[in-house]
Image 1 (spheres, rainbow, N blue to C red):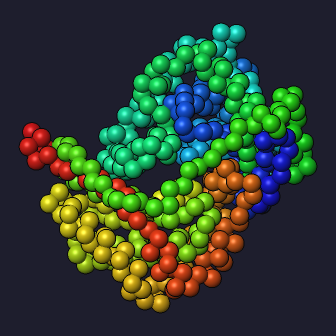
Image 2: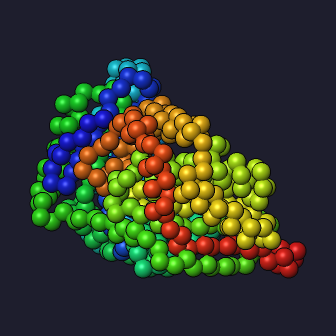
Image 3: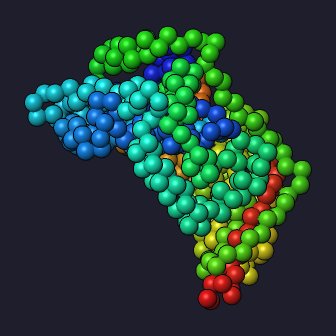
Length: 426
């Protein structure tokens, strides 16, 4: 994987390979999560659907079909306290084109026209398009509330990071989306185009010089200035001084227990290999303590797993529980973390965790989507670390480092979604 600055605030990341029959091009715009999250999500969906050259969905789909069934998808990610807006295009590799067409170059032109030439008037984005995308985005936002596992996690993070940008939903709020106007979205588009950091990813079999020249030409007319490029930072809270518990009742058949913990990190790569390995032993695999003990032996949860977000320094534990078992499960989860702090884990468990993570990192190379996602995860950083390099770093972690990493973890917020038996019965 290579990366190169081609314009102020614009980074080109490439991974050349003949391994796949498809290629991927993605434009990733890095913005702050702290403001206008809903409007930026709405803007991205508008950009992905049509453009000035292909102003209707039918015309856009016809063009995509002409590129051997290429697909453009909008994607919104929360990376630390950055909201990353991505236009992702997947197309056929040039080698398999029937008439020798340069499919990737044409695909690059199409996705770039979505970003640089949206279907707008002097007054802003068209109202009919806005109404359609508002409805679809709000439906997606509402669907996350209906999916209780996602709802419980988002609610816990909202409580845990109430005074931090990280607590904001990556899609924003319904009210914010509904209030957006075509004129506001036009101004927002211009601001992002001239001021937001951008990372372009290209994965597949391509001429590197040709791609670099094409992308450089796209940004040259903008005359972006280094001093105007926005800086997006993430606030790391290293320690929770007390744990708070939030309870909510709903008519659900299965309760949810979600725990938010501070991992003790001061920036996104601080002690990362040891914390990552510790978390794997704690709860991110079938060999982990949460799976083997809390779920299998004690049968306290339908599922129970932990996840580390190194871009914010937070560990989350998610579990599905019967309401009457929530407190027992909470104490059991706390106990398993204490066991790691005391060094109560086997060398076999450590080796299983290392192998699991090593295999996970190397599996990134198994698909164009995996490679593109990996490169996108570094859109907020200056350089990309190869997955295989991280696997080697994990292998170098010793037992004492795992214990130290566990001792740095502090519990911040416990969220329990309880079943309201009366409502559920009705």
